[in-house]
Amino acid sequence: VVLNCSAGSHQRILRALLITSIEKTCGCTSPEFTRTPVKPGDEGKIKITYDSKGHKGFQNKRLIVKANTNPSESIIRIKAQVENINTF
Image 1: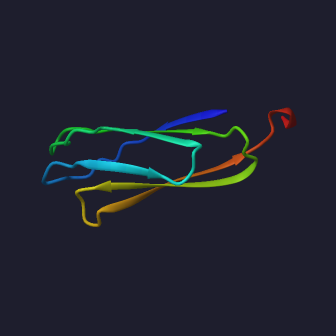
Image 2 (image 1 turned 45 degrees about the vertical axis):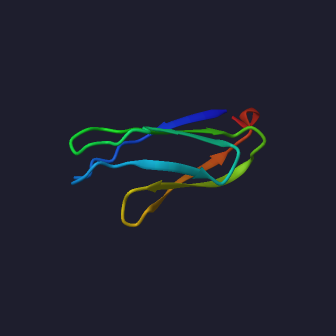
Image 3 (image 1 turned 45 degrees about the horizontal axis):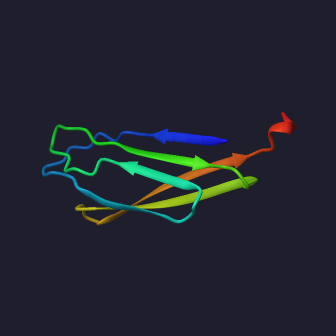
């Protein structure tokens, strides 16, 4: 099962937001993000794909977003309960 997630956070920013990287702590996650500066009033995107293949039970994945913010790092967590499809 591959899960695609995207979320928006509407916060008032006073200067352009620039995400420089997203570090993943597991090979099962694939982040995509807006790589150009997001000006105040504009919208950027972060999309994370999680592939549950080979995983079972409770999963707690973490990604570290690095940007020109204070603090310079923010955490995105994905929490999921992975079940065998044959149990449904």
